[in-house]
Length: 178
Image 1 (cartoon, one colour):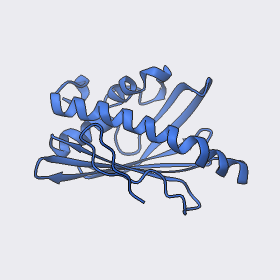
Image 2 (image 1 turned 135 degrees about the horizontal axis):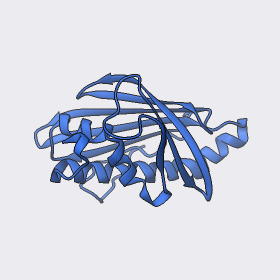
Image 3 (image 1 turned 90 degrees about the vertical axis):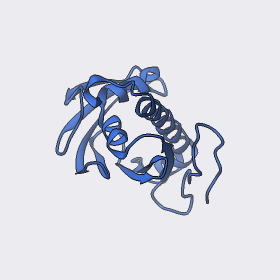
Image 4 (image 1 turned 60 degrees about the vertical axis):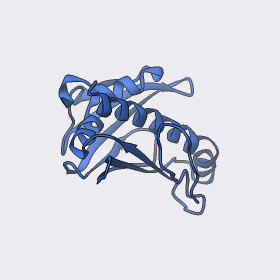
């Protein structure tokens, strides 16, 4: 199922595959910048922090600033749904400037795998995020995933992608990605 999204010069995206046992969010974002620049902005931890400022998110362990790379971990601490959460991700695939993957190694999810793809286009880059996630607690967790978390996580990714797009297109990002 594909939906048209009229905001942010965004191309259509599939929100959540409701037929899948594992919730999957896919978002496509068109950016008028090179894949290298978009890739670096996506790996920029300081830019990520700027995009998640509303949650008070901070990098508290592992790599905490600059560009994250293969094999590196970061632990985020932020407030979501009124509760402070910690989430540790590790970069498990890294092919600059085409693709990288971050996977949760510690946190509240049963599964959290986020793929980032960057394809050159005639006008810049098509950035594609695919997030596969699952909560613990069996059927109750699956219900929470579909009713609450899928839309919430999609909005977080859209906010993050807007920040990445603006930074990549205007050249305003942290010093690490310049």
